[in-house]
Length: 527
Image (cartoon, rainbow, N blue to C red; front, side):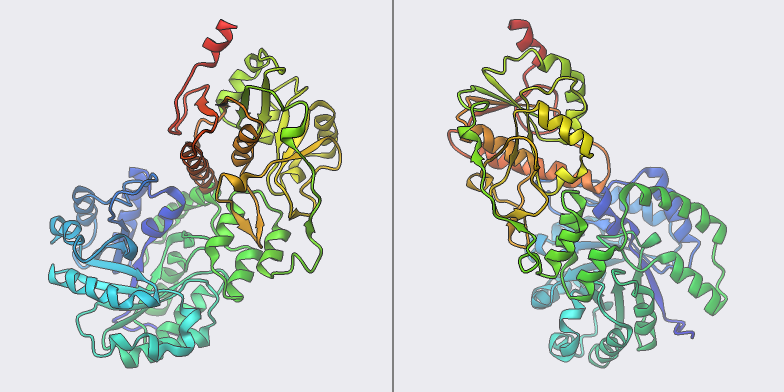
C-alpha cells in the first residue's frame, strides 16, 4: 500500500538522537559521509544536534552546535533541504533563547522542541519567539500512548494555529499500535491546520507499521534515524523508509552509498548496541518509560530476569528478595583500626600498580576492590576485600569464586533488602549502608549502590583517615555503558566531597575525576 503523497517529508535525526550514545561526538569523516548521503537522498529535513546552555556533565560538539559547524553542514546539503536543530525545552527560556538564535539566522531553517503534554503552553510561547526570528518551528509532543485516548483535549491549543511548521506525535515508549497511531494522527489533522508528523520508537518492532499508519491517516512528516540509532530501543530506520519511498514512488535511492554508510553504522552499533530487547519490549507494551530500563541495563549489574521482575512488580510476591542481615564491616577485625582505605577500580592504572600496592601494610590499610576485573590484576589477594553490587557475583565462575573466597578477608555488600542470588554463599560477608551518604539507584524499591559508593561508605564507617583511589582513571571510551559509569562515579565523588568530616580523598594515579592526585610511587619510596 502506497501511503505517500507528493507532500510527504522525511526528517532524519541520526546525529541528534544518536548523540545519546556518543555524547554527541562524531568523527568528521563520519559526518561528512553522512551529509553526502542525505544530500543525495529523498530526505527533506536533517536535524544534526542541539544548541544548549552549558551543562555540568560533558557533551560534545553536536550538543553545542556552533555557527561554523552549522554553516559547514548547510553547505553540504541540497538547496531544497532544510537544516534543523533541537532545543531541550527545559534548558531554554523566553528571556534567553534569543542568544541561541541570533547568530544562526539564514543558516538553520527549522527549530524543533520536544514537549511534554503539560508544557505545551510554554512551548508555544517559545515557538512565537523562534518564528519571530524567521525560522520554521516544529513541536514534538511526547508520550503519545499516555494521551492517545484524549487527543482533542491535549491538542486543543493547536486549533487554528497557522504559523507552526509541524506538529509531531511521539510514541516515546514505543508501545503504540498502528490503529492507535492512525486514529491519533487523523484527529490531530482535524485540529491542527498544518503538517502533522510522527516520531516512532521501535521497542515493540512497530515503528515502521506505525509510520505507515500515520501517513495513511493524513500525516505528512516522518522522523527516522539510520539503523534506528537512538535512545534505548531506537527509532524507525531511515534506510527502511528510503527503500519504501524508492519502491513506492520510483524515486532514485543511492543504494551504493547507502550500503557503504550502513557499514559505518554497523560499526557504531557494535560499539553501542542500541536496539530492542525483552525488557524494552515489555516496558513499551506496559506503558513504562524506557529511560529507567536503559539505566538498569547499561550498568550491567542486574540479571535480566530481575529487570523483568521489576517491570512487572513481581519481585516481592515471587520471593525474589533477600532480607538477611550480616555483620557490619566496622565490626570486622580485618577492617577496624585502619587509617587508610585503598579502593581499586578496573582502570589500567590499577593493573600497572598491582605489584606496588602489595607493599602496603594490611595492619594499617584496607585494600578494597570495587571491580571484579581488578582482582585479575593481582597474584596475591590475601587479606583484600571485594565490594559486590547487584548481581555481580553471578559473573564469577564457580572455581574462581571458591579461590577468591579462600583468599580475601571478606565480601562487602549493601544492607537488606537485596535481590536473591546477589550474596556469596562462601566466605566472610559484611555489610555497609551507603544510603547514609548517597542517593542510591533503586530498582523495584530495592536500593542498589554502586561499587564506589560501597567502598567510600566502608571507609567512612570504619573511621579511616584517608581514602586512596587507584584504577579510577575515568572512562575514556565511547560506549554508553562507559559514559553512564563515568557519570555515576563523578556524581558519587562530588556527593562524597560535599559531606563534612569524611576521610580525605585522593587518587594515586592520573584521573579524569576532579580529585587531588598523589603519586603511589612517591608513597612507596618513602616507606
